[in-house]
Amino acid sequence: MLQLLFRKWWVVLFQGILLIILSIYIFQNPVEVLAGISLWFGLLVLAAGALGIIGWLAADRPEREGMSPRLFLFVVRHALLRKRRVENAP
Image 1 (cartoon, rainbow, N blue to C red):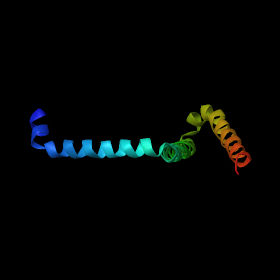
Image 2 (cartoon, rainbow, N blue to C red):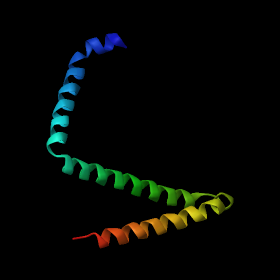
Image 3 (cartoon, one colour):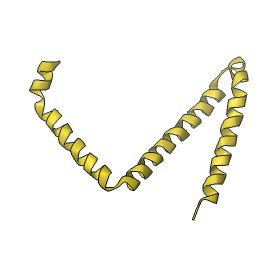
């Protein structure tokens, strides 16, 4: 493993330079970076919820019985978050 790192030293150097540039950008623009992270996190949560619903629909009947409250809570949470987003809109 160590020999591979010594052979590919330029990859480690390039990664270090990119991380330094990225850290400078993050410190210069914290609001934009936080907005981007929030957007990606929201997309991941939305995808996980959609896949959960698809998994619930694809499950056999006995397996679905325990999931009904979770589906109801997902819908209620989504509705509450949407309401909060509309109220906070400029």
